[in-house]
Amino acid sequence: MSTCDVCGNQYDKTFTVHRAGQTGTFDSFECAIHAMAPRCAHCDCRIVGHGVENDGRFYCCAHCAKKSGVRGIEDRI
Image 1 (cartoon, rainbow, N blue to C red):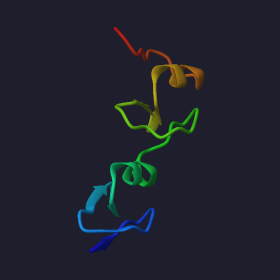
Image 2 (cartoon, helix red, strand yellow):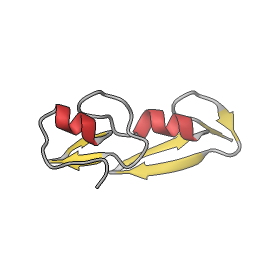
Image 3 (tube, rainbow, N blue to C red):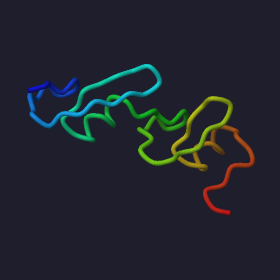
């Protein structure tokens, strides 16, 4: 059995996530998100969906990007 990197639970169905040179072992998607999902540059929430990116900074939505001064990003067309 493997151990979750976040909560320490020993579990027979853990999985491994690889992202940008980082690797983690988790027992749930919740723990994987907590450890590896990027954070919004404006509100600091975890970005679970697509989010938006501008000049290497990630935002959870167009609203947060706009609040940070990004222009030309819309949630809807």
